[in-house]
Image 1 (cartoon, one colour):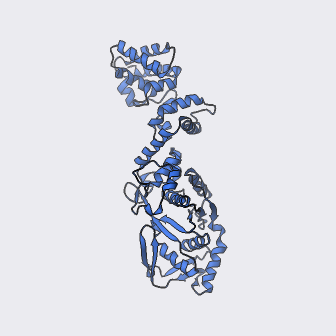
Image 2: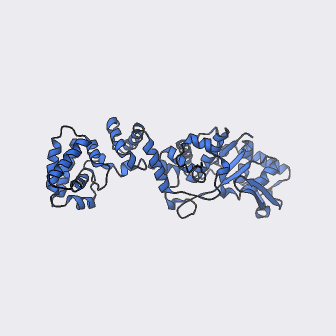
Image 3: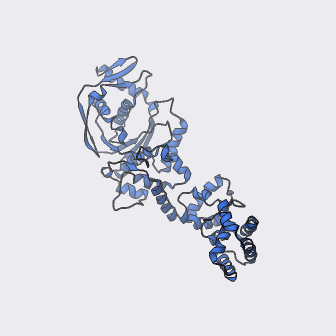
Length: 431
């Protein structure tokens, strides 16, 4: 059998993480089986469909590295096909007109279909005695359009969320009435949040775009989505996209709901960041920093790479460069009031900052090793525990009580900024 799958989002909202996982499973299955992945846009609800949401779908799929082999097809452009097949059923006496709508009377009987994960599922059709095929406004219902499209597009496997299980027996009845072959069904479990309810805005971000904006790497996000309900075996957690394709098997998708763990995603993304070459990661950070106005277009690439190497192992998402390391780009930095109170306004701190500033101003080289040697030497001369000097200097230079390695920060900032900040902090340290 030639594998043909489809992903069929509606452009009525931003692409949801759950829908993205469905798209990914379809795409991985198609690539693994050397089949075709079809993109179909279900936009029959013209009132709710929005071009901005369509662009979001395209951008999100591109971010995930998912590219269609066929499509996009638009249901709004296929109305004559749905009308023609409704007429077929009307002519055969299988459907009837009712107040401008076309309805299908279902014969009471059990309907059985096979699901890849759950085996045979049987439903009594008395639960849905009548199916509307075409609404009074001339547009098809979801179930009817879905059956016509899947059949005409020769879809071999329908892989979708298990919230569609209730739709499947209705569609099976329509496949049979239209004389179409019935595809193989696979209903994958939903993604749930911390409260074990369906992932919603209460648990935080739900759209792919929000995760892209925060700065998750696409390969890390795809890796994480793939592991929501599926496992490559061997307790592996880092599986790059090409290996996902090689290892993916539909039958190994778990039947239970997948828990979206943001901490696990952050950890995984952090691992990918650590493996990203500094020049590449520096370029990604530069895009964000220029967009924020913190970095000029003609920025010093060597300098930013030096900064990137310093912080790479400390960030979980790209946004962390803005949230936790703004002090590299703001002059003077924003000082945390509690850090100022705890470390700068102590007896003797003012004099030590002034004296250290004077010593650092005479250094021939201003690299991390030279700055560290001078700072520790001054502390020893003054009979200070090194920490008693380093903590106030950290706050003076970064504005924060916690930062990347202090002497590395000072080297990246450079002599002029460090001396300026030590002078500024000395003013803050005055009683």
